[in-house]
Every structure is written in C-alpha cells, then in structure tokens.
Image (cartoon, rainbow over all chains, first blue to last red; front, side):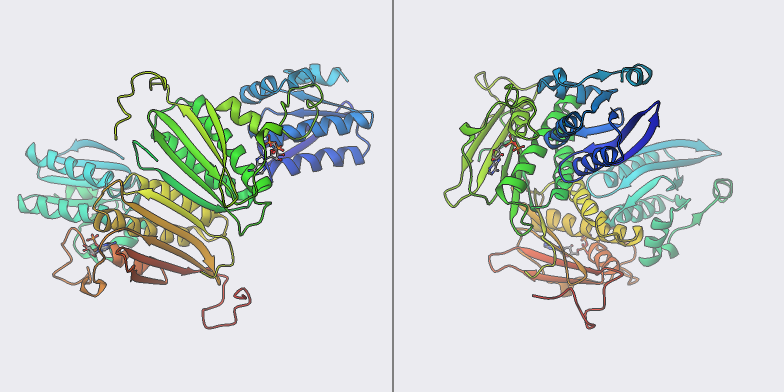
Length: 111
Length: 111
Length: 154
Length: 154
Ligand SMILES: Nc1ncnc2c1ncn2[C@@H]1O[C@H](COP(=O)(O)OP(=O)(O)O)[C@@H](O)[C@H]1O
Ligand SMILES: Nc1ncnc2c1ncn2[C@@H]1O[C@H](COP(=O)(O)OP(=O)(O)O)[C@@H](O)[C@H]1O
C-alpha cells in the first residue's frame, strides 16, 4: 500500500494504491487522513481508482475518516470507485453516506 | 508448460516454455521428443531459453531424451541455457554429456 | 469429513501479515476449480474476513496462537473452515451493519461480508474453546444441495 | 520445536499439482525474510524435491495420503520439514548421481539437489512409519551455528 498525495485548488487529493486491508492499508489510510487534518486541510478527496482489494477493516477506515473529517468541519468525498469497491459500498449501504464522483474536475469544483 | 516446435535445415527445434518439473513439464517433454522420433526426425535441438524452473525430474527427462535419441542414431543438443539451468547441468556434471550452444545458427550447422 | 478431493490444510501464527499467505493458498486452490473471477474474489474476501476475525477477536494477535484453515471441495461446494484458539462468542449478538445506528460504525462488517459473499456460513465452537467458522459456496456447475448429487458418493 | 517465529504448517494430498501450492507458500514465506533471489530459489527447489519424493516414493501418489510441510525460522536458519506417510528408506543406499555409472540415469538426483541447495539436510523416520526430511539454510546475516546466537534465547 502506498498513498500519493497532491493538492488542487485547495482540495487535498489522496490516492491509495493497492490493498486497504487489516493491519496494513487500513493504518496507512488513517495516518494519511490525520496528517491532512493536522496540516489544516479540510477538503479531502479520496481517489480509490488504484485500490485492488478492500476488506471490512478498510471500509471501516473509510467510514472513520469520513466522520473524523466531518467532525472537524471538513468534507471527505470519494472519487473513481473500482467496480468491486462500488459493489461493497452498495451492499453495506454506505453509498448513501459518501459523496462519490467519477470525474476529478467535478469533484474538486464541488467543494 | 508449452512446447513450440519448428524445423530449420533438417533440424527440429523444440522450445519448451515454463516449468519442466515432475508431473507436468517432464511428461510433455518426453512426448514431444518421442513424436519427433516417430516422425523420423533424428536431429533435435532443444532451446531451453524460456525454461523458468527445472527440477531433478526435468533434468532426468533431458537425460532420457538424450539417450533415447542417441540410441536411434540421432543427436539431441541443447541451445541457450538460462543461468539456473546451466548451474544445474554443471553441478550434476551433465554439462560434460550434452553438446551446448549459445547461437542457433551455429547449433543448426553443427548437425 | 466427507470430501470428493483431498483437502488442503494450512496453519499460521496469529499475525495479520499471514493473511496474505492464506490468500494465495486459497487463490491457488480456487484456480484449479475454474470458478469465474467474481466468485473467486468473493470467496477470497470472505476467507480474509474469517481469518482476520480469528487473528483479532479469537487469538488477540498472539503470534503463538494458531489459526487453522481447511480448504476443500465437497459435493460440489467449496468448503472452507477457519478455526482459532479463542473463547468463542455469540453470533446472535452481532447486529446488522446496515441499521441506521450501525451505519457509521468503524467496525462490525466482517461477518456481514462473509454472509454476503458466500452461500452459507456457520459458526460452531469447540468444547476445548475456539471458534470454527465454516464457509460454503456452490460451484456454478454443481447441482443445488437438494438436487441429485452424483459426486456425493463415499 | 524451538522457534523464533511462529511456524507455517501446510498439509496437502499426494498429487504432483499440489507442489505448486507448496511452492507459493514457501516463496511467500521467504519473501518476508529478505533473502537474496538466488538463496530463495535454491530453497524453493530443494523443497520441491523433498515434496516430490514424499508424494512419489513415500505416498505412491495416493491422493488420500498426506504430505505435511512445516516452515519456520529457528536461530537464524530457515528450517523446513517435509513428512510423508510412507515406509521410509535407507538414505545410505542412495548413490552419487555424478558417478560415471549413474550419470546417464534418468533418476536419482533429488536428494543430491537438496544437499546442493541447502546447508544441511537430515532424514529421520517416524516410529509409526513415514519419512521426515529436515532442510536447513542459514540466513546470510545470521551467525554460524557455533557462533554467538543472540536470537537463540529460550
Ligand atoms: N473468531 C472470533 N472469536 C471471537 N469473537 C468473534 C470472532 N469473530 C467475530 N467475533 C465477534 O463478533 C463481532 C463482529 O465481528 P465482525 O462482524 O467480523 O466485525 P468486526 O470484526 O469489525 O468487529 C466482533 O466484534 C467480535 O466480538
Ligand atoms: N520420502 C521417501 N520415501 C521413501 N523413499 C524415498 C523417499 N525419498 C527418497 N527415497 C528413495 O531414495 C531414492 C533416491 O531419491 P532421489 O535422490 O530423490 O532420486 P529419485 O526420486 O529420482 O529416485 C528414491 O529412488 C527412493 O528409493
């Protein structure tokens, strides 16, 4: 697991690559989001395009990240869900919680 | 395991790809050589460039093929040994048994 | 246990990194069964959850404690058993993670994943302690459990 | 058995195709140890030979009979045990495949491969029948067996 980070028009875009799973990816994801918050970022866009596997812990981390960012007055949104991640968010009904975009421009403008 | 076969100036070139190991590659190799002999071919060049793993059964099949072809008045020679196969032929002292070439032109002309 | 094919059995210490090992064994074992990619991924994810629970809740990540994974095909079903050395729990106490009160919880989706991705999951508890979860999925080509089962001969 | 790390244990039926499964478990387990590619390949080949012998000579390819592979790191050595349910044999009767009379034989190179690729191999035989071959290879960074072994504390 590796998480790239870049900024665009005041939005921090996080791009995890690989597996977001228990013991590895989940911790990295949490750290990345906490770092953003500590640096004062409040508009966070998580691009999931390069995520190959996500387990229930990974999904749990996404939810935690969402609530943590919201509690600090920010907004975590999702970009480019791979079909398997999309399915899982559907099944868990978390799709109703997250704001999801397919297009980065659109996502960035939405903040 | 997959074995390509082609002819050049009366020499049959066999090109096994992948693993020559017990239960899989070893049998395929034996069949390929027996087919050549049945069709009357006596000059057989085994190009090992694309062999990724060879075990003691695979080495045994090479030796069997060598003796079978010799007994029918033919000649089995080897071409393009990957370093790991080279090492194993060295260690087993079979390198003294086989005629080995690095260059296909040279190998074909040698028959 | 009745089995058409010999089973594969794997024992690991209770460390999350060993989940990858289980994963590749399951994936390699499934490869021979000619399942479609989606079914294979579903099984693989369910096993991941079962092993994660065994490591986390069963064995509390004590690397000395063992998680055992038993993999086989039985009467046209993939059957995987995951067992730990924990004290067990009451599966009836586990809530539905889709309930409004649970939706934003960071945990509580593992067993739900197993249910979703498999045809059947079953918990049992060893007398000496330890949870066993049995995961089943029918091979697409296999008849339903109630139908004629020509493979089911012993 | 004394071990620095928890061991991985794998049980398979006696079919050659299961050698691939053993292979990937060994390779995944080695990956964590940061061995160089050559050492990893050597171990992997030696295990392949041990398992092939267990399936062929030990269990006569009876898929009901089990081959067990135990993998671990012990005092700076990779230690792999492969056991079968056969009747054993006398390792002293096995000749050197490099002898002129053996050089053109199609078989008899498996144990020689294990010797060549590992630092040490040892045969033992279970009282109830069955061969156990123990393969050892020192990790490059580890001290020799006779040197100070700070990891070897128990
Ligand atoms: N193998 C196990 N041993 C003991 N308790 C378990 C086991 N598996 C699950 N549980 C219990 O069931 C609860 C729900 O599990 P699960 O749905 O996987 O969600 P999570 O693991 O995120 O809590 C766990 O919190 C735990 O209390
Ligand atoms: N696990 C085993 N059980 C019984 N006999 C064995 C076992 N391993 C090796 N042997 C005996 O030792 C001989 C030499 O083995 P090996 O060097 O691996 O060569 P090969 O397997 O090609 O014969 C075998 O032919 C067999 O008789």
